[in-house]
Structures are given as C-alpha cells and as structure tokens.
Length: 226
Length: 401
Image 1 (cartoon, each protein chain N blue to C red):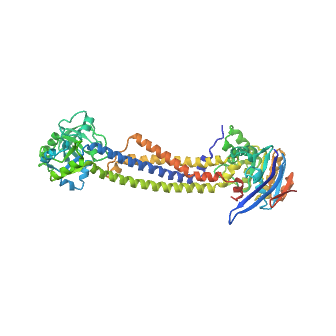
Image 2 (tube, rainbow over the protein chains, first blue to last red):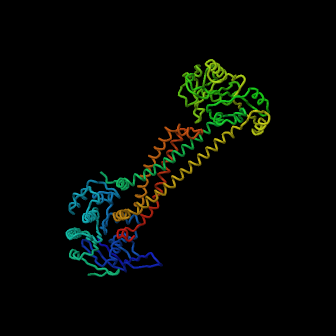
C-alpha cells in the first residue's frame, strides 16, 4: 500500500500564559512505498512522532491530507477510520505499551478481541507463529508485568502484525533495547518490508539506516531526504 | 470457536481488589435502598392496617387512663394493660347527639403464670353493638363467636382448631386475623360471655384482681361512629364537656401521633439513604476517574489496535455497569436478608405499626433498587468514559497528553 502525506502540517496550542501556538510539523510532502522500509531520523522534538501519528491515522493534521492509495483517511468518520486502522495499519508505539490485565497472546490478538474473530484457533495459531518468530514462544500466558523491555517490544511488534496489515508504523522501536534486541527488531521490520508490507520507522538508532530503503531526516518540523 | 472475550470482564478480573471494593460500595448503596424503602413501606402498610382496624371516629376512656404511660399503645396497638369505668358512662355517652353507632370493649390482660398459655391482651367486645371488630372477625370466621370461641392475632403460634388456655379455661381458636404490625397481632378477641367465664375462673383460681370487674357493669373503652350530619369535632367537644370523668379522643388524632412518628422515622431514613448515596456516588465517580486516568496508555493501545472512540467509551461504561450490576444484586439480596428474617426485631425496636408489604411490592422495590443502583454506578463512569474517548492516542503514548 502506498501512503502519501500531502502538505501535512500540525500545530499545537501550548497551555500557559496567553495563547502560544507552535508548529510541530511544517507543511510536509512524504511518500511511503510498498514493500520498502522508510526511515525517519531527527533530534528529539523535531516532529518525527507527530508526523508518524498523522500518517498512521491517529492524529488529524492541521492542514493537508493523508492518502492511502486514493483514499483520504481523515475524510472518514471515527468509526470508519478506526475500522480502517484495525484492518490496514499496524502501529508499534513508543515505550512499553500493553493492556496489563491481558496475557501476552491476548495482547497480540487485541484487535480481534475488539471486533471478534470467527476462528479463534487460527488467530491464536498465527499469534503463536509470530511469537515463535520473535523469540517469545514461552510467554503466551504471561502477563505484561512479567516481561522485560525487549520482550514487550517484540510483543508490540507481533500485535501490530497480527492482522497482516498493509503498513506498519514503528515509533522508536529500538529505544531502550540492548544491541542484540535492537538488531533483532530491525531485522524483523526489514524482513516484514521485504515480504511486501510498507514499513515506516522513526528512530534515533544510527544503525537503522543500513536496513532502510529510504531515509529522511527531520529538523524543527521540516523534512528532508537523506 | 469465536474470539469474543469481553475486555470489560478481563479488566474486572485483572483488578480484583478494585473491582471488589467498588462492588461492595454499590452493594451498600443498593442495600440502603432496599432496607430504607421496605422499612418506610412497612411502616405505611402498618399504619394503613391500624387505621382500617380501628373503624371508630371517637374513643372514650376513663379520664384516669388517659394519663397512663402506655395508654395509646393499649388502646391503639393492643399492648398489655387495662383500665375500667362504670357502664353508666356508656349510657351517658349514648344519649349525646350525633352518635350513629356505639359499642364498648373490655380489656383483660392475661397472667403469665401456668394458668394461661401465653401472657397477652384479651379484648372483649359486644357482638350486638360492635362495629369495629365484628366486620373483620366475620371476614375471618364467616359468622359470630360462640361461648369460649376466640379469634387470635396473626403472631400467636396457634392455629385454627387449636385450643388456648386462659385461667384454666380452654378456648377454641376459630380464626386467625391478618397481620397489623402492632401488638394487636398478639391479642385475643372474644365476646363478653367468654370474658365473664374467664373472670369467674380467674377468681376461682385466686389469680388477678378481677373481683370488681363485672362485664355487665364496667367497660374499658367506648367506641363511637359519628353520624354523617355531625362534625366529629363537635361531637368530641360535646362529649368532653358533658360526660365527666372520661376523656374522648379523635382516633385520627391518636393515629396522627403514630403518623407523625412515621414521618419522622421516614425522614431520618431518607436522610441516611441520601448520605449513603451521595458518598457512594462521589467515591464511585472518583474511583472511575482515577482508574481511567491510570489506564490512559491502555486505552491508547486500544485506539491503535482499532478501537473507535465509541468502543472505548462503551468499554469503560460496560465495565462500570458489570461491577455495579453485580453489586446491586448482591446488595439487594443482603437488604432482603436483613429485612425478611429480622422484621420482627425491627418492628420491636421502632415501636411503630410495622407490616411488611405484599410480596409483589417487595419484588418491585428490589427490582427498582437493582436498576437505580446499577444505573447510578454506570452513570458515574460516564464522565470518565467521555474524557477517555477524546484522548489522542499518539500524544498519550508519547506522554504529552
């Protein structure tokens, strides 16, 4: 799936004395190619995550459009956009993210728990396949509180992939991970892209560039190709 | 097999301490409704039963009796006690204007010694003139009482066909009356001839001081039904003015004392219920707000997994509804467990007419308690549900929101 951000920008209003607007992302044009890993780097606060969230359908841009193929996703109402996101977009968020009361396999199958699946056995079977691929097969029935940072990140990747989405957005997927886990995660994402999924990664990681097909840099809300 | 596990159930199970605390809180709220409303309804039902039993407009008693400490309980509620006046007062009262019906009653408190099955109030009435007791005795027996026939209150543990002994006289239980929620439920009604027989026997046994009591010559109270064309107050004033050494009361005024007490008790119950509810709702509101705040990241994860804002809102409300519904059912059951087995104790401690309403009324009250408590609990989560549904997942996960 080809994703295009057409002149997308985002302004925030900071709370405090008086009105203080700031532009997190200036008007930006970007294209994420099918079957490629696109990397976006930049300093903290440069607007990388904001751009990712806009492209992933999680944050409406102040101006511009986000096109998935020929469809402008922000023209959809919340129900339809959420359904679209569930079916087509996998997001690996920054930090440790899990629903604490669900087991690892339930967290991975979260989108099916939200909507329901006709065949639980096949959903769980694919979840187990992903867990095995990411090296966490024995953690199926553990709660997230029992997992390490690396294991949680791999669980989040499996959760993003469970519906075999057309695009995956990963926000600092290697943050806080050791070298071994960093390499593992980047290899997984690269491999996913090679299998036909569009992958968009925001990362500080210097080594990430060697896995990328396209590299961009962001500075003070402005994007530039590397 | 379908994958449709409820996130709400999982969240409830995953946070047992919090869920249990909120369930108990809702249970207390529901129990307060059941106990409060059943108590107030029982008091009203008791008052209604008392009113329908009295049947008279005016009650005349000896002036000396009116100062007795438990006078009202004796005449209104059948508590054990007695007082007498000469029957000539009956004739004097009967001569006054505006009296449609008049009848006398004689109170006899039975002894607690071995001569009697149980110590209780025996009320003798004159079948020829009575208009207060006879209608519901006829309703129970289908006719008049014969010699040594008695009708017993609902709380006495004897049955129709049994015998009950007073002063070694075996009396036949021919009917059992409906419950009133007062001491009348432990009273025994019989006619004047049987009263005479009991007094004779007590004198033979040398028990009690009934030697001056001749049912043909003394009465305990005179009951009056005022003619329609005469105001009750006018007849009352006339009696108090012209029939000396007696005191006449309007029965409605006597009941109004009970009614005032009932209003007072109902008010206190209402205030307590409001306090429990106010506190409960504030705690529930804070608990749901804090819980949702703590779990903002989790809700953001649900958003990125494809949950719509409405779905997230529904998850929060349904979680609250499951907890509060469970609590409401448990609380209602607990309320019933308090009210049903212990209603006698409650009646005794209140000293007011107390009669549990019919089963269908209790069922309706319980159903209302469950619905109101569950709905109120769920409503207290509505603000949290609305707030969490507005969050921006991307910003929350970055920690900016």
